Length: 384
Ligand SMILES: Cc1cc2nc3c(=O)[nH]c(=O)nc-3n(C[C@H](O)[C@H](O)[C@H](O)COP(=O)(O)OP(=O)(O)OC[C@H]3O[C@@H](n4cnc5c(N)ncnc54)[C@H](O)[C@@H]3O)c2cc1C
Image (cartoon, rainbow, N blue to C red):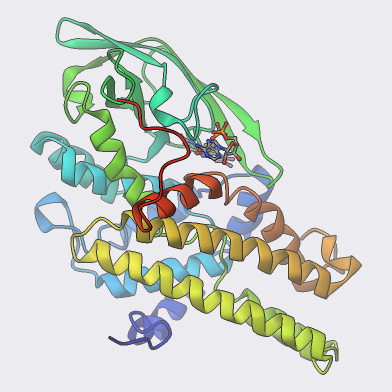
């Protein structure tokens, strides 16, 4: 086993940096931050046009011959540049879920459309009354001939304002976990309404409402009442395969700042930076393990939860520690000329607050690890 840092991308790092230097625009970062958007349409189109979204996907579903390692290295550069790509991340999760649970027609239409950058799929799981307990969803889908009629409301449907489809969890019969069904619902369908919700992290997410929304049966993903099997696969791709608000180069930039500011000789500062470096390494390895299992065709259930839990909590520890290290001016935001590290720590701190909530809270991750790895009893009995 090779534990070399960034081993998988080392060969592509230089080319990826050159790509980023040539194509990424600082105004996209400003635009995303000011709008609270975690997706930039111009960047998304560019990635599609360069075959980067399609890297590593099967050719029959529109995969490109761009090297997947190069594409991943570019995505890391984009992340480090300060651009969020949630529109692609949620789309990517759903495409992987479709590969395993979708019909051949869904794979042949949705996957190529998404890899061309034309379809952007967002997640519609959480409701005003059900988040961690996702199986308590009440948004109802009722059959009507060869169509379904959907009524209900979803909370935190992030990027729905820029997406084309929502991967919607609905209730089709009463048994809690065995009465759920998924649909891919076009966001421009009649009866869909999207309203903004703004978070402390400055992100715009959404509440979405569904009133008499009609979709054909071909929009159903998985079996009727088989939604729990689908969501179990989808959740695996949400945890441990992408790094929330972890910023690969931030610690190095903070260490440079400490050197320039002359505080690096303070043993307390050096110790703090060393602790953060260890956190980064553990987060990287846990994430790499989950990604490695996924690439081998496995489903990293417990491993993904470990990576998600550790990475999100490590990001919060890192940003809080760096705020302390940089001093009072660290709370200045990016628009203030004197903001240290161009306001990056302040922004990252606010953003990482939500990392331990979405994609499953830390408490839920601990429960999965305790039950799945240690065989401990669940705090909430399973309902069927
Ligand atoms: C910024 C942001 C973006 C999001 N984006 C999306 C999205 O795109 N699509 C989507 O569907 N959802 C999204 N979510 C929703 C997110 O997945 C939920 O917020 C999360 O699952 C928690 O659900 P909840 O908010 O209903 O809290 P609750 O489930 O009500 O939890 C409240 C508290 O109780 C704890 N708790 C609950 N159950 C247990 C238990 N069994 N054992 C121990 N503790 C427990 C939780 O850990 C938490 O601390 C987003 C959330 C945020 C904040």
